[in-house]
Length: 140
Length: 452
Image 1 (cartoon, each protein chain N blue to C red):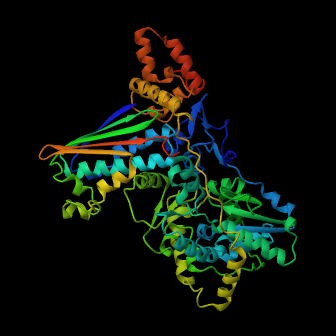
Image 2: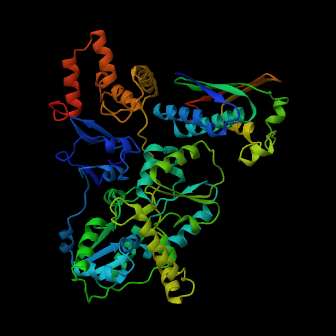
Image 3: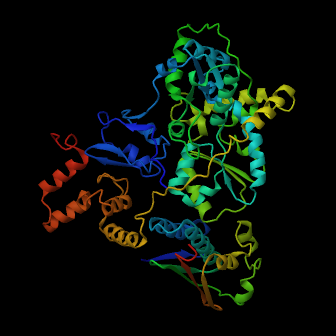
């Protein structure tokens, strides 16, 4: 199954909608609760990252019997130092964004914790691509 | 291991149902369909919130209760009455007056459900303290919410607090007290006067408990009518003085919105009305909201004051209970006798208040087998492309999405959609006579044999 969702930069009122849609699909597919939980948490973080930092983006979801592949691609400022951005507590979010309860600097590290494979590539001034894989039957 | 099926207090009376779709459209778990012109309940989706009962224009949905005369099968006949019962009446009718009318009706004892609150409150404080790492802990007070989480938010079942609601705590304690007074347990019938359908379902098939200490359940509107008639007809000068212990303010307010959350400490939140709760839990599952310690979730607007079996306007009920609570105060600490009693009850009930973990019973999955579920999901998507997305419900399902799922599961046929029928007719696949008979299958003859 393949799904694509558009993500609008700067619109926090719509942040989380795509993640909720994916969650619904995974439930219908009878994917284990704990797996659903992890995927959705990672996906939501990644979705909010695009809303908070980029101009716009897309979320591509590919589900088969073995795994859930999520690719989030945005056009935005890019991440200058990916390794640093992965550190817990590191954040570039503006005070306004923090005031809304986002931008605590847990985003990327939280994603990493919740997926089996994470690959981030970024080009300054162009955008960022986040690829995540979660295996459905691992550790069951 | 499979759970036994849910017992449902809500029943659709076929003879009365006119197949109007009101109930189907409001149902928060999409548990109703229309077939042969009648609403049909899908058992494992229904959470007994009672919203269908509220909107039915012809009273075809009933809340099944125990026959009132059943109380007379018992020597000791206890009415277990929630505080919102008093809130059904105007200020000039006292709780004592209501309770003595209940005794005139045939009960030998009248107790208030919320007598169990103080014990539960103390137990809950310890419970919350010991389980701080689980965030948020969700109250299991409202049985419709417990069931909603089981069927729609299975990932959150571990967040539910495993403690009995005040109703069960009180019933257990009264049973014991009566036994101590020398009454035979088998001759003691405890009847709960319920403001909602979900509590009935919870008594008849408890979640996380083996069986309920409650003998039977009687609807609050039924009892209200009996009591109010007596008062109106001035039969009401009852001389019976029921023995009641005054409730604390906290206990009086417990079943209302914020009744629990104001006492749980930490970051506590209350959400009422089931559609609001669903939206909230959607967000919670994404972990959009962090650091909430305690969640009080209630299916009805204004919580139990808005129960589907209440008669009075819910806002008046809340107003009256607030006044009573302000007068009562949370004066437990001042009264040594009460304090001792709570301490004793706490020790007695300690082992009985916890319940077993609640198991998820997801209604969402298309199939147990993921490969099959994937195939079905693809079919749902394909069918979805043919459907108009107007959610008119003329097919007998509440939305185009649920209709597509029903087709894939074999419960409906694509040509039940009025839009698809037009398309098929234009293509010459379906004749208008065929469409007509298909619609008769969904809606029965009454709606289609009309002289227009």
